[in-house]
Amino acid sequence: MDTLSLRDVISSGVELTSGDAVAVVQQLIRSDDHDSETMVPPGPPSLDNVRLSGDGAVRCAACLATPAVSEIAGLLDALLPRGGKT
Image 1: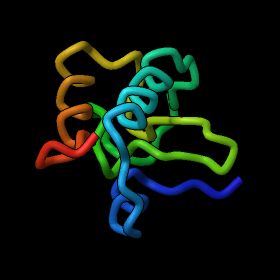
Image 2 (image 1 turned 45 degrees about the vertical axis):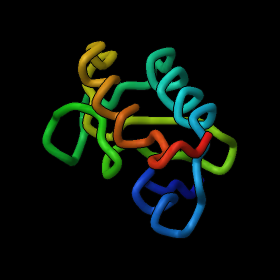
Image 3 (image 1 turned 30 degrees about the horizontal axis):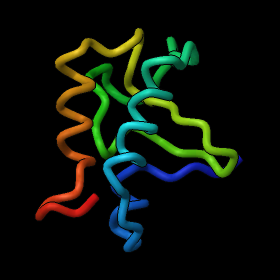
């Protein structure tokens, strides 16, 4: 199944609401699909390594375990709309 990085989704002009951003990080926290044979260096979730699939699944290509609260906070900050949009 084809997937897109969060950066690709945002760059394509899709405007995520704060609710969308929270839904993405919630799915990432709940996911038990961690890639133990990742092709990218392991690290925190980011706009570049978190991928969305057509069925709505969220997966972090670099996460070897459930991300820490601080890592989720950084991703959420990157996803939240700026300028008071909701």
